Amino acid sequence: MDLLYFFELFVGGMIRGSIYALIALGYTMVYGIIKLINFAHGEIYMIGAFTALIFASVLSFTGMNPILIFIIASILAISFSVGYGVTMEKIAYKPLRGSQRLSALISAIGMSMFLQNYVLLAQTSDFLPFPELVPDFKFLEPIKYLISSTSFLILITTAIVMIFLTYLIKFTRTGKAMRATSQDARMAQLLGINISKIITITFVIGSATAALGGVLISTHIGQLNFYIGFIAGIKAFVAAVLGGIGSIPGAVLGSFVLGWTESFGTGYISSDYEDVFAFLFLIIILIFRPSGILGRPENNKV
Amino acid sequence: MLKIENIQTFYGNIQALQDVSIEINDGEIITLIGANGAGKSTTLMSISGLEPARHGKIIFEGQDITHMDPDRIVQLGIIQVPEGRRIFPFLTVNENLDMGAFLRNDKDGIKKDIEYVYSLFPLLKERRNQQGGTLSGGEQQMLAISRALMGKPKLLLLDEPSLGLAPIIVQQIMAIIKKINIEQKTTIFLVEQNANLALKLADRGYVMETGRITLSDTAKNLRENDDVRKAYLGI
Ligand SMILES: Nc1ncnc2c1ncn2[C@@H]1O[C@H](COP(=O)(O)OP(=O)(O)O)[C@@H](O)[C@H]1O
Ligand SMILES: [Mg+2]
Image 1 (tube, each protein chain N blue to C red):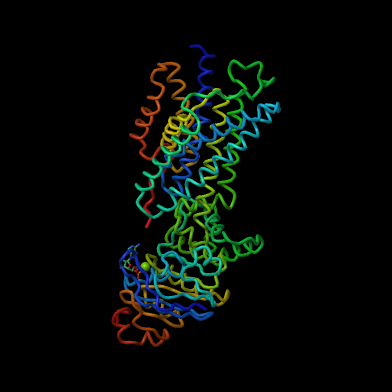
Image 2 (cartoon, helix red, strand yellow; image 1 turned 30 degrees about the vertical axis):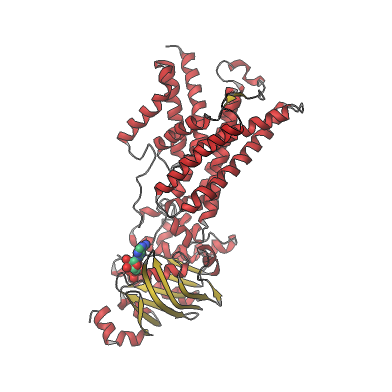
């Protein structure tokens, strides 16, 4: 067996997994709090990527340092995606709170189609090149056939985001309130927790990490179009369900498991079936563990 | 302190409360007794703002709270321990207590109050790093009361704290409720199906039947009232 090839696939799987994880976090957190599968979440990722592209292109004319451009574009991408995510919740989901779950789900699908078409009309359906902003890191020289600069950036950023989020959720008052709300929202209210604020925070975090994923993958691949949010969104959703929707560690684990499955599947079996592996794997896991790898069965609330 | 004036509360089109009026004075223990489905829990939820009354008024310390958001009502000092305790099952005992103090910022005060509730219920201290869901029913009730106390309530609403607990635990919890009332000067509104118990503890009581208050008197008089004895005390 070719060990180098194996490692290439391994790293490739981790990169996919990282991007899925950055998106899956939003799915799983929103589901945990309001029990809604936010189908438009992939669009937030796509909008992040587009925002970065637009600002990066404009700033490129100024002759600014590419790394600086990348950072500014990323910050703006995150801000825009957060704006869209929070607004989406206010106009499409909040008014439906308390009604049947299906209504909110339909609203989410509508939101997804709206945002896709909005970007399609405002921009174009063609693939657009994303400027090269990340230079070759010197220290990666010896292993650059294995890890490119952009891959490195993806892995490092994802790791930092995960550490930060773990801290937030586990130890801060807001994080505890988020967990409390996902376990029993009415009780949380009886203790003075403002559910609307918690929901907004959830959308802020989910949108920010998704935007980051969008920017990172676009620099990595070097192109994007209005449709990237759809397929990545579905894969990340699969990852979240795989790990156990509602569970944050589950979403991360599910993402990496899915990333590796796809990477090894396409590498050793056939790249024709890239998208099939995700769903095949999902079906197999759900047969044996209906609530996902780390998910817990829905507790019976009064 | 709290004045409920002719409130009517609905679930959709179904009316659960019909012209309910209750008055609670500072420092009292007031009980609301009634059969299952009478509307006791709904009364508490209307006070807490989760099921706001459609008509009528709820006044707390001179402020109209009828349509206030639940978190603002908590901020004013009205805290409820709901029916079924509703401990966060996947938060530890300590984290559950932290959530009780969610609106507070006085770190030292919070620390002192955690020690206070641990002194009331030493068992909880032993279990402080255990998940709430792993506690027994009695321990969960102790935690639910402690969690509410962490919010420094002026008015503590208790919804059937004795439900499903062994008599010895019930005695213990009732004693603690009395202690909180005396030591912390916390006013207590106790909802119970166990009228015997409630009327022993309370200063005054209200009797509720199908969404209406049918009787109100001192606890002593209610204990001696023939209708109450027949219907609720099983004598
Ligand atoms: N969430 C709800 N939706 C519809 N009806 C409810 C709901 N909660 C309670 N009810 C009804 O309101 C009435 C009063 O209930 P409740 O306040 O829970 O009574 P109690 O606490 O005295 O047992 C009952 O008829 C009950 O069926
Ligand atoms: Mg009840």
